[in-house]
Image (cartoon, rainbow, N blue to C red):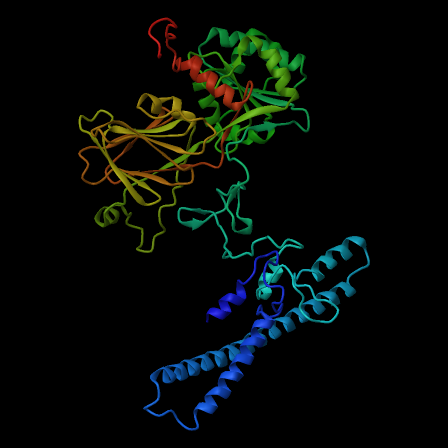
Length: 546
């Protein structure tokens, strides 16, 4: 009915309306009285018209007037019934309001007498925003319409202009590879109150502050370099005598060089194999590298899981990860050992190869005679490789194009036909991927670069995938030749027909110390290392816009 709509929206929030309107129903009282009186008059007139009945010979205008009066009488009766219904609804909501108010007042009486609790309960008691005077009737308030119980609770205290909550409730969850997974969860998004907002950035600058003084360092050096050997001797002696470090670990090769210089370096410690160096990780506070980016890659590859913070000194040909100058190593180490240290968090890829399943005939032939049909499956462990720069899949010595099927979270991406494919971290975006036409990306941006090598298609452009995806690269059965994969330029392996390379983001990043901060170091590296956007400035003379 149009009247019910009018009851919900008859006035604005500040009470602009008829001064004689009913605060409980929204009707004008004087208008209702007049309508009721008019209805009784019409009914009396109709009763008079019924005796005697209207003759056919009477004027037809009188007949039309009689029919109009009947219609008006019906409308007035309907209006009276509608008023009664609305009055009943208003009484029902008034009763609900009274029950809610009495309930809140009861909670207020039971609460402790402390000031804080009393204030909180007073707010609870006043949460319904309709005001009731002493006579018990609903007085005029900020709401001239009928509000539901939920709406009354959602309104702010003494805030008649606040909007009522109408959003559906919902919940966000983090998923990985189509399943709920908290491994990649980042506390950077808020979804309270039905609004999705960003709380923080995932690539924010990280700072390390020592709670206790560092006592152990590990040093990796560039091999076959005389300047590096000289500096390593000076640095080890300075760390022991001036800084009083208890444990200084070096590579076996470096320890032999130090002992050849002087037997006083017998305090230096080393390790025998990769398993032993993994056991040293919890004991090492800092890792120092003397060389270029290759030395940093080598040092990071020695740790299969967590890596201590790396302090890289530039003593190589080109360094995007080596911001510290070797000639100033004492001042640099003084600041770093004292702290705090600004760090760049460099993500790594975790890779392994899944071999093609053998046909049933080959499986039966490979079984030893003593093996039964219920033999245990192959128990060889999957070999995982951590990569800081990139994984490269190429055609090797084959004269044919590589044919690689690529999948992202089991969704088909494309078929690579060309010289190969590079799966790079954002740290490796300034290495091989850049030479193949990929973008330069700040190392703390979480992502996987998907860069083709000389693709046989002009529309094949590089991609940047999110860091939580699982990338698979498979050599299909119809490939003319095998492919070859290398990890940070090492450990080259063959991918035969049916083999699959599986890559995902590792949960163990490499943290490198910054000279200033991560952004400044990155911009300095591309300016100094690549002469990025370096050209002669346009002359100021010449034609100008008029």
